[in-house]
Image (cartoon, rainbow, N blue to C red; front, top):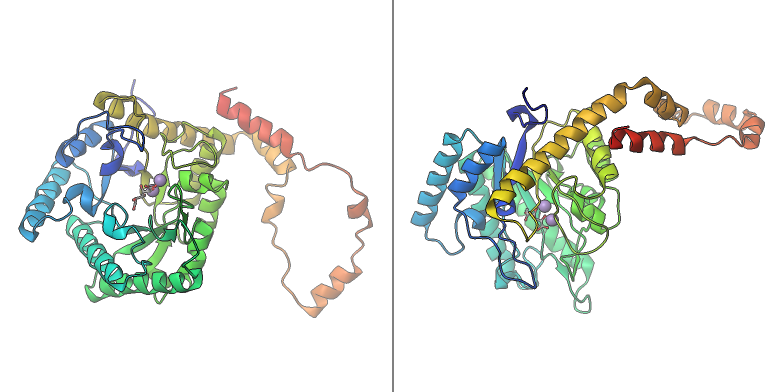
Length: 387
Ligand code: GCO
Ligand code: MN
Ligand code: MN
Protein backbone atom coordinates (compact mmCIF):
# COMPACT_ATOMS: atom_id res chain seq x y z
CA UNK A 1 0.00 0.00 0.00
CA UNK A 2 1.35 3.44 -0.84
CA UNK A 3 2.19 5.71 2.08
CA UNK A 4 -0.51 8.41 2.35
CA UNK A 5 1.98 10.65 4.16
CA UNK A 6 4.76 10.48 1.56
CA UNK A 7 5.68 13.83 0.03
CA UNK A 8 4.51 14.75 -3.47
CA UNK A 9 5.96 17.63 -5.53
CA UNK A 10 2.67 19.53 -5.27
CA UNK A 11 3.15 19.65 -1.50
CA UNK A 12 6.06 22.05 -2.14
CA UNK A 13 8.19 20.91 0.76
CA UNK A 14 11.59 22.55 0.89
CA UNK A 15 14.58 22.49 3.23
CA UNK A 16 17.50 24.89 3.60
CA UNK A 17 21.02 23.64 2.95
CA UNK A 18 21.79 24.90 6.45
CA UNK A 19 19.02 22.81 8.04
CA UNK A 20 19.69 19.19 7.08
CA UNK A 21 23.31 20.29 6.62
CA UNK A 22 23.53 21.50 10.24
CA UNK A 23 26.38 19.71 11.96
CA UNK A 24 24.94 19.73 15.48
CA UNK A 25 27.34 22.29 16.94
CA UNK A 26 26.04 24.75 19.54
CA UNK A 27 27.56 27.47 21.77
CA UNK A 28 28.70 24.77 24.21
CA UNK A 29 29.81 21.98 21.92
CA UNK A 30 31.66 21.16 18.75
CA UNK A 31 29.86 19.71 15.72
CA UNK A 32 28.80 16.08 16.03
CA UNK A 33 28.26 15.38 12.32
CA UNK A 34 30.70 15.62 9.39
CA UNK A 35 30.26 18.28 6.69
CA UNK A 36 28.24 17.18 3.64
CA UNK A 37 28.63 18.62 0.13
CA UNK A 38 25.65 20.68 -1.11
CA UNK A 39 25.23 18.34 -4.10
CA UNK A 40 24.98 15.33 -1.76
CA UNK A 41 22.41 17.16 0.37
CA UNK A 42 20.35 17.74 -2.77
CA UNK A 43 20.41 14.01 -3.63
CA UNK A 44 19.35 13.07 -0.11
CA UNK A 45 16.56 15.65 -0.09
CA UNK A 46 15.25 14.21 -3.35
CA UNK A 47 15.14 10.79 -1.69
CA UNK A 48 12.94 12.04 1.16
CA UNK A 49 10.56 13.63 -1.35
CA UNK A 50 11.49 17.29 -1.01
CA UNK A 51 10.46 19.60 -3.85
CA UNK A 52 12.92 22.40 -3.22
CA UNK A 53 16.19 23.38 -1.60
CA UNK A 54 16.95 26.87 -0.31
CA UNK A 55 20.24 28.42 0.69
CA UNK A 56 22.17 31.35 2.08
CA UNK A 57 24.85 32.71 -0.25
CA UNK A 58 27.57 31.40 2.10
CA UNK A 59 26.04 27.92 2.46
CA UNK A 60 26.90 27.37 -1.19
CA UNK A 61 29.67 29.81 -2.10
CA UNK A 62 32.17 30.05 0.77
CA UNK A 63 32.66 33.62 1.99
CA UNK A 64 35.58 35.21 0.16
CA UNK A 65 35.43 32.99 -2.96
CA UNK A 66 36.70 34.52 -6.20
CA UNK A 67 34.19 35.39 -8.94
CA UNK A 68 35.44 32.43 -11.02
CA UNK A 69 34.96 30.03 -8.10
CA UNK A 70 31.54 31.47 -7.44
CA UNK A 71 30.47 30.92 -11.05
CA UNK A 72 31.74 27.35 -11.08
CA UNK A 73 30.10 26.48 -7.73
CA UNK A 74 26.72 27.98 -8.64
CA UNK A 75 26.68 26.30 -12.06
CA UNK A 76 27.58 22.90 -10.60
CA UNK A 77 24.94 23.23 -7.89
CA UNK A 78 22.30 24.25 -10.45
CA UNK A 79 23.07 21.11 -12.44
CA UNK A 80 22.80 18.93 -9.32
CA UNK A 81 19.43 20.49 -8.45
CA UNK A 82 18.05 19.96 -11.94
CA UNK A 83 19.50 16.45 -12.08
CA UNK A 84 17.72 15.54 -8.84
CA UNK A 85 14.41 16.97 -10.10
CA UNK A 86 14.37 19.69 -7.44
CA UNK A 87 14.16 23.48 -7.65
CA UNK A 88 15.56 26.40 -5.68
CA UNK A 89 12.47 28.36 -4.58
CA UNK A 90 14.29 30.75 -2.25
CA UNK A 91 17.73 32.17 -1.56
CA UNK A 92 18.77 34.41 1.29
CA UNK A 93 21.81 36.32 2.46
CA UNK A 94 23.92 35.71 5.52
CA UNK A 95 24.32 39.15 7.08
CA UNK A 96 25.12 37.82 10.54
CA UNK A 97 28.00 35.31 10.67
CA UNK A 98 31.03 37.39 9.73
CA UNK A 99 32.67 39.61 12.38
CA UNK A 100 32.16 42.65 10.15
CA UNK A 101 28.43 42.44 11.05
CA UNK A 102 29.04 42.52 14.80
CA UNK A 103 27.26 45.89 15.06
CA UNK A 104 24.55 45.08 12.52
CA UNK A 105 24.40 45.02 8.73
CA UNK A 106 21.75 47.25 7.13
CA UNK A 107 21.45 49.06 10.49
CA UNK A 108 25.15 49.11 11.39
CA UNK A 109 26.34 52.49 12.58
CA UNK A 110 29.32 52.43 10.22
CA UNK A 111 28.09 53.38 6.71
CA UNK A 112 30.86 51.25 5.16
CA UNK A 113 29.44 48.16 6.85
CA UNK A 114 26.02 49.06 5.46
CA UNK A 115 27.46 49.40 1.95
CA UNK A 116 29.27 46.07 2.31
CA UNK A 117 26.00 44.44 3.46
CA UNK A 118 24.23 45.82 0.39
CA UNK A 119 26.94 44.47 -1.89
CA UNK A 120 26.65 41.02 -0.28
CA UNK A 121 22.83 41.04 -0.44
CA UNK A 122 22.85 42.08 -4.11
CA UNK A 123 25.26 39.22 -4.89
CA UNK A 124 22.93 36.81 -3.07
CA UNK A 125 19.97 38.09 -5.11
CA UNK A 126 22.04 37.36 -8.21
CA UNK A 127 22.69 33.78 -7.06
CA UNK A 128 18.95 33.36 -6.55
CA UNK A 129 18.18 34.75 -10.00
CA UNK A 130 20.70 32.39 -11.58
CA UNK A 131 19.18 29.40 -9.80
CA UNK A 132 15.61 30.43 -10.66
CA UNK A 133 14.52 31.40 -7.13
CA UNK A 134 11.44 33.63 -7.10
CA UNK A 135 11.79 34.55 -3.43
CA UNK A 136 14.56 36.31 -1.56
CA UNK A 137 14.37 36.08 2.23
CA UNK A 138 15.87 38.83 4.32
CA UNK A 139 16.45 37.97 7.96
CA UNK A 140 18.09 40.69 10.02
CA UNK A 141 19.86 38.44 12.48
CA UNK A 142 22.18 41.24 13.63
CA UNK A 143 19.86 44.19 13.07
CA UNK A 144 19.50 45.02 16.72
CA UNK A 145 21.36 45.83 19.89
CA UNK A 146 22.71 44.17 22.99
CA UNK A 147 22.64 47.61 24.64
CA UNK A 148 20.41 50.47 23.58
CA UNK A 149 22.58 53.14 25.26
CA UNK A 150 24.19 54.31 22.02
CA UNK A 151 21.22 53.73 19.68
CA UNK A 152 18.05 55.57 18.80
CA UNK A 153 15.70 52.93 17.34
CA UNK A 154 14.01 55.57 15.16
CA UNK A 155 17.29 56.33 13.43
CA UNK A 156 18.17 52.64 13.03
CA UNK A 157 14.79 51.96 11.43
CA UNK A 158 15.41 54.75 8.93
CA UNK A 159 18.65 53.03 7.90
CA UNK A 160 16.80 49.69 7.72
CA UNK A 161 14.19 51.23 5.44
CA UNK A 162 16.85 52.73 3.16
CA UNK A 163 18.64 49.39 2.95
CA UNK A 164 15.56 47.40 1.97
CA UNK A 165 14.51 50.10 -0.50
CA UNK A 166 17.97 49.87 -2.08
CA UNK A 167 17.55 46.12 -2.60
CA UNK A 168 14.10 46.57 -4.14
CA UNK A 169 15.48 49.16 -6.56
CA UNK A 170 18.24 46.72 -7.50
CA UNK A 171 15.69 43.98 -8.26
CA UNK A 172 13.72 46.44 -10.39
CA UNK A 173 16.82 47.70 -12.21
CA UNK A 174 17.60 44.13 -13.26
CA UNK A 175 14.05 43.46 -14.44
CA UNK A 176 13.79 40.55 -12.00
CA UNK A 177 10.49 39.21 -10.67
CA UNK A 178 12.09 38.42 -7.28
CA UNK A 179 9.81 39.02 -4.32
CA UNK A 180 11.40 39.82 -0.97
CA UNK A 181 10.15 38.11 2.21
CA UNK A 182 11.13 39.70 5.53
CA UNK A 183 11.68 37.31 8.44
CA UNK A 184 11.24 38.51 12.02
CA UNK A 185 12.87 37.18 15.19
CA UNK A 186 12.75 38.71 18.67
CA UNK A 187 16.30 38.01 19.85
CA UNK A 188 19.39 36.17 18.72
CA UNK A 189 19.62 34.97 21.53
CA UNK A 190 20.98 37.79 23.71
CA UNK A 191 20.14 40.95 21.82
CA UNK A 192 16.91 42.69 20.95
CA UNK A 193 16.34 42.63 17.21
CA UNK A 194 14.54 45.50 15.43
CA UNK A 195 11.16 44.50 13.94
CA UNK A 196 10.91 41.48 16.27
CA UNK A 197 7.66 39.91 15.07
CA UNK A 198 5.76 39.32 11.85
CA UNK A 199 3.32 42.04 12.87
CA UNK A 200 6.16 44.56 13.13
CA UNK A 201 7.37 43.51 9.67
CA UNK A 202 3.91 43.93 8.17
CA UNK A 203 3.80 47.53 9.32
CA UNK A 204 7.39 48.21 8.21
CA UNK A 205 6.57 47.01 4.69
CA UNK A 206 3.95 49.73 4.37
CA UNK A 207 6.64 52.38 4.99
CA UNK A 208 8.77 51.20 2.03
CA UNK A 209 8.94 52.59 -1.49
CA UNK A 210 7.65 49.40 -3.17
CA UNK A 211 5.47 47.59 -0.64
CA UNK A 212 4.04 45.38 -3.40
CA UNK A 213 7.45 43.69 -3.77
CA UNK A 214 7.60 42.73 -0.11
CA UNK A 215 5.95 40.14 2.06
CA UNK A 216 6.87 38.12 5.13
CA UNK A 217 8.45 34.80 6.03
CA UNK A 218 7.05 34.02 9.48
CA UNK A 219 8.89 31.34 11.44
CA UNK A 220 7.13 29.18 14.00
CA UNK A 221 10.05 29.16 16.47
CA UNK A 222 10.52 32.92 16.25
CA UNK A 223 6.92 33.87 17.02
CA UNK A 224 6.90 31.28 19.85
CA UNK A 225 10.08 32.82 21.30
CA UNK A 226 8.04 35.99 21.72
CA UNK A 227 5.26 34.00 23.39
CA UNK A 228 2.96 34.57 20.41
CA UNK A 229 0.60 32.27 18.55
CA UNK A 230 2.20 31.28 15.24
CA UNK A 231 -1.13 30.52 13.59
CA UNK A 232 -2.33 34.03 14.40
CA UNK A 233 0.81 35.56 12.90
CA UNK A 234 0.41 33.45 9.76
CA UNK A 235 -3.24 34.45 9.75
CA UNK A 236 -2.41 38.15 9.77
CA UNK A 237 0.14 37.66 6.98
CA UNK A 238 -2.46 35.82 4.88
CA UNK A 239 -5.11 38.43 5.63
CA UNK A 240 -2.68 41.13 4.45
CA UNK A 241 -1.88 39.15 1.26
CA UNK A 242 1.75 39.06 2.40
CA UNK A 243 2.53 35.41 3.11
CA UNK A 244 5.32 34.89 0.57
CA UNK A 245 7.12 32.06 2.40
CA UNK A 246 6.87 30.20 5.71
CA UNK A 247 9.53 28.70 8.00
CA UNK A 248 8.11 25.62 9.72
CA UNK A 249 9.80 24.15 12.78
CA UNK A 250 8.97 24.01 16.48
CA UNK A 251 10.00 25.62 19.71
CA UNK A 252 9.47 24.90 23.38
CA UNK A 253 8.35 28.25 24.75
CA UNK A 254 10.12 31.60 25.13
CA UNK A 255 13.87 30.95 25.15
CA UNK A 256 16.71 30.84 22.59
CA UNK A 257 15.92 29.59 19.10
CA UNK A 258 15.58 25.79 19.06
CA UNK A 259 14.49 25.04 15.47
CA UNK A 260 13.15 21.59 16.37
CA UNK A 261 11.56 19.20 13.86
CA UNK A 262 8.15 20.50 12.73
CA UNK A 263 5.47 19.00 14.99
CA UNK A 264 7.94 18.01 17.73
CA UNK A 265 6.58 20.67 20.13
CA UNK A 266 3.24 22.46 20.51
CA UNK A 267 1.09 20.15 18.39
CA UNK A 268 -1.97 22.32 18.84
CA UNK A 269 -0.33 25.34 17.20
CA UNK A 270 1.15 23.08 14.52
CA UNK A 271 -2.32 21.70 13.79
CA UNK A 272 -3.91 25.17 13.68
CA UNK A 273 -1.13 26.41 11.40
CA UNK A 274 -1.39 23.54 8.94
CA UNK A 275 -5.17 23.81 8.94
CA UNK A 276 -4.93 27.52 8.15
CA UNK A 277 -2.33 27.09 5.41
CA UNK A 278 -4.32 24.31 3.77
CA UNK A 279 -7.63 26.17 3.95
CA UNK A 280 -6.14 29.43 2.69
CA UNK A 281 -4.97 28.12 -0.68
CA UNK A 282 -1.41 29.23 0.15
CA UNK A 283 0.68 27.94 -2.76
CA UNK A 284 4.18 29.00 -1.72
CA UNK A 285 6.94 26.80 -0.35
CA UNK A 286 6.32 24.81 2.83
CA UNK A 287 9.81 25.34 4.07
CA UNK A 288 11.33 23.52 7.02
CA UNK A 289 13.83 25.75 8.81
CA UNK A 290 14.66 23.16 11.44
CA UNK A 291 17.64 21.06 12.47
CA UNK A 292 18.07 17.61 13.93
CA UNK A 293 19.03 17.00 17.54
CA UNK A 294 22.74 17.20 18.24
CA UNK A 295 22.62 13.52 19.17
CA UNK A 296 21.77 12.36 15.64
CA UNK A 297 23.93 10.97 12.87
CA UNK A 298 23.66 11.71 9.18
CA UNK A 299 21.27 8.84 8.55
CA UNK A 300 18.92 9.97 11.33
CA UNK A 301 18.93 13.49 9.82
CA UNK A 302 17.13 12.27 6.72
CA UNK A 303 15.37 9.05 7.79
CA UNK A 304 13.89 10.41 11.02
CA UNK A 305 14.26 14.19 11.12
CA UNK A 306 13.55 15.35 7.54
CA UNK A 307 10.97 12.63 6.95
CA UNK A 308 9.48 13.49 10.33
CA UNK A 309 8.96 17.16 9.34
CA UNK A 310 7.21 16.06 6.15
CA UNK A 311 5.15 13.32 7.79
CA UNK A 312 3.99 15.58 10.62
CA UNK A 313 2.85 18.20 8.12
CA UNK A 314 0.99 15.67 5.99
CA UNK A 315 -0.56 13.90 8.97
CA UNK A 316 -1.76 17.24 10.35
CA UNK A 317 -3.09 18.24 6.90
CA UNK A 318 -5.11 15.01 6.76
CA UNK A 319 -6.32 15.61 10.33
CA UNK A 320 -7.29 19.18 9.43
CA UNK A 321 -9.31 18.05 6.42
CA UNK A 322 -11.11 15.49 8.56
CA UNK A 323 -11.69 18.11 11.28
CA UNK A 324 -13.39 20.43 8.81
CA UNK A 325 -15.70 17.74 7.43
CA UNK A 326 -16.64 16.09 10.73
CA UNK A 327 -20.24 17.08 11.43
CA UNK A 328 -20.06 16.75 15.20
CA UNK A 329 -16.91 18.87 15.35
CA UNK A 330 -18.35 21.47 13.00
CA UNK A 331 -21.51 21.65 15.08
CA UNK A 332 -19.39 22.22 18.19
CA UNK A 333 -17.35 24.91 16.40
CA UNK A 334 -20.52 26.62 15.21
CA UNK A 335 -21.89 26.48 18.73
CA UNK A 336 -18.73 28.36 19.74
CA UNK A 337 -19.37 31.01 17.07
CA UNK A 338 -17.30 29.83 14.06
CA UNK A 339 -20.02 30.60 11.51
CA UNK A 340 -21.41 33.58 13.43
CA UNK A 341 -18.12 35.48 13.15
CA UNK A 342 -18.51 35.40 9.36
CA UNK A 343 -21.43 37.79 9.61
CA UNK A 344 -20.03 41.27 8.82
CA UNK A 345 -20.25 44.20 11.22
CA UNK A 346 -22.37 46.96 9.63
CA UNK A 347 -20.62 49.93 8.07
CA UNK A 348 -21.23 53.34 9.53
CA UNK A 349 -24.07 55.56 8.47
CA UNK A 350 -26.16 57.92 10.59
CA UNK A 351 -29.11 55.56 10.06
CA UNK A 352 -27.17 52.48 11.18
CA UNK A 353 -25.88 54.35 14.20
CA UNK A 354 -29.43 55.45 14.99
CA UNK A 355 -30.65 51.85 14.74
CA UNK A 356 -27.83 50.65 17.04
CA UNK A 357 -28.69 53.39 19.51
CA UNK A 358 -32.33 52.30 19.47
CA UNK A 359 -31.57 48.56 19.61
CA UNK A 360 -32.82 46.77 22.71
CA UNK A 361 -29.77 44.99 24.22
CA UNK A 362 -31.59 43.94 27.40
CA UNK A 363 -31.61 40.24 26.51
CA UNK A 364 -27.95 40.34 25.40
CA UNK A 365 -26.81 41.90 28.65
CA UNK A 366 -28.85 39.42 30.71
CA UNK A 367 -27.54 36.43 28.77
CA UNK A 368 -25.25 34.27 30.92
CA UNK A 369 -24.83 31.39 28.47
CA UNK A 370 -21.21 30.44 27.81
CA UNK A 371 -19.59 30.52 24.39
CA UNK A 372 -18.65 26.80 24.49
CA UNK A 373 -14.99 27.06 23.46
CA UNK A 374 -14.02 24.37 25.97
CA UNK A 375 -16.09 21.79 24.12
CA UNK A 376 -14.72 22.78 20.70
CA UNK A 377 -11.13 22.78 21.99
CA UNK A 378 -11.58 19.40 23.67
CA UNK A 379 -12.90 17.93 20.43
CA UNK A 380 -9.88 19.36 18.61
CA UNK A 381 -7.53 17.79 21.16
CA UNK A 382 -9.28 14.42 20.91
CA UNK A 383 -9.17 14.67 17.12
CA UNK A 384 -5.42 15.35 17.18
CA UNK A 385 -4.97 12.46 19.61
CA UNK A 386 -6.82 10.17 17.25
CA UNK A 387 -9.91 9.55 19.37
C1 GCO B 1 17.56 31.62 12.31
C2 GCO B 1 16.80 31.96 11.10
C3 GCO B 1 17.48 31.55 9.88
C4 GCO B 1 16.84 32.21 8.71
C5 GCO B 1 17.72 32.21 7.58
C6 GCO B 1 17.12 32.95 6.43
O1 GCO B 1 16.96 31.67 13.35
O2 GCO B 1 18.75 31.34 12.24
O3 GCO B 1 15.55 31.35 11.17
O4 GCO B 1 17.50 30.16 9.79
O5 GCO B 1 15.62 31.64 8.36
O6 GCO B 1 18.92 32.77 7.96
O7 GCO B 1 17.74 34.13 6.23
MN1 MN C 1 15.13 30.26 13.45
MN1 MN D 1 14.05 31.00 9.61
